[in-house]
Image: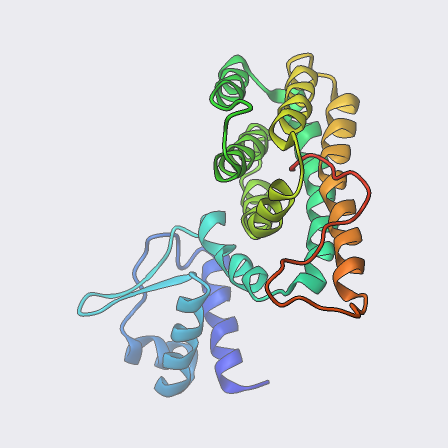
Length: 250
């Protein structure tokens, strides 16, 4: 094991044992390196690595602190990784999202309260057929985010948020190539909201799964289309959309 990796594990161990808690300040570099029996250079590299993944917060002139260790911080790296994925792997991300959205919907159906339901109703009431694609995408992200929040699991909500934000481009493309995208999306969202209001776990899960699967199927068809050889390519045109009707934005 590399010395830097060993230093990272030692600091991690201090956090797990409660020697370092969220918001606490690490001992000075010299003291910490002597305490752990490691060189100052390896300790310095370990701190840099843990700062990147938001476990530590280095404040110049003040010291190094343990962050809040909240999910939104620790899972920020997920968003960065997803950003690097090309269209070829977006289907795998959607498959993961489909599984997580189903879980979130089931959990939300059990524990959702009137405040959460009112938030979802408000989001639905803020859009209509005249809403542009960007507005619809913003609504969709908020709507699914509200369901994830209602599930009561911050790690699940953060994971879903990381996956959903990186599907915006696909959603916009889907919205631009389909008629009545707003109407279809709102109809599906209303169905999901009704199932949540009735605390119907199975129905909420089924509707959310179908909702996310719709755009996943479209993306699969779109990938086949753009990967097929085009005898007369037109560099000025966008990739053609599949012949079969597209699902609603999800």
